Image 1 (cartoon, rainbow, N blue to C red):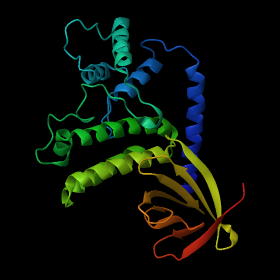
Image 2: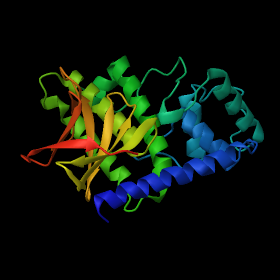
Image 3: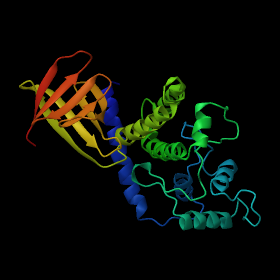
Image 4: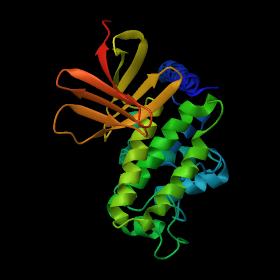
Length: 289
C-alpha cells in the first residue's frame, strides 16, 4: 500500500468511527459494560502512551484504575467484581471531571501530577527521570497518553498497523534528547510535535480543507492541503502518491509550513511549494471549489 492510500484508509476509519460514536451516544451507558469500561479508560488513561497497557476490564486494569484515582488499598472500596465497584469508580470520575475530549485532551484530577508511566524504577539522570521531576513535562506526557489512546481507537482497522511501532520509535527519539544542548527544551518540543502529529494524522482536532492547488500552470500538477488546529499548527499535503505532514514555522511574511523535505508557503498572495530534497520551487494557484 502506498502512502497516499494509507492516508485515505486512515480518513475512512475516522469517519467510520465517528458514525459509530454518534449512534452509541443515543444509547444509555450501562455500568460495568464494555462501553462503560472504555469510557473509564479514556478518562484515566491506563496505558503508558507507549503502546502498552492492561486489558480493559481485567483485574489488573481495575487495579490501575484505582491507582490512577488515588484510591488503591483504601479501606471500604467495593470488590472489583461487583456492580458497586463500577458505581464507585463512575462517581469518582464524574465528580473529578476527568475526561478525554476531542483531540485526546485530558482534564486530569488535581492529585495527578506525575507522568503516565511509573516513576518508581526509572534510571536516575535519564530522560524519564527528568520528566518525573518536571511538572510541565509530566503534563505533556499525560496529554500524549490521552491523544495516543484516542488515535488507537481510530487506528484499530489500520493496515498495516503502524501506530504502536511508530510510537516506540518516537520514544527512542525522545530519549536521544540527552545529546541536546538543552535537554528539557528538546523533550518538550518532542512531545508537542508528537501530540500535533497524532492529532492531525488521525483527525482528532478541527481542520479546514482539503484545498486543491494547481502548480506551475499545470492542472495535473496538483497539491492537496488540509490544515489542522493543532499546537503547533500543522497541515497534511498530498502530491501524487506522496504525503507530507508539515509544521508551521516562524515567518516574517505569510504562513510557512515545513515537513521533512517539503515546504508550503502562502506568501504575498501566492502559494509556493517545494516538494522533495533540493527540488525546484513551484508557484501554485488554488483551484475554484
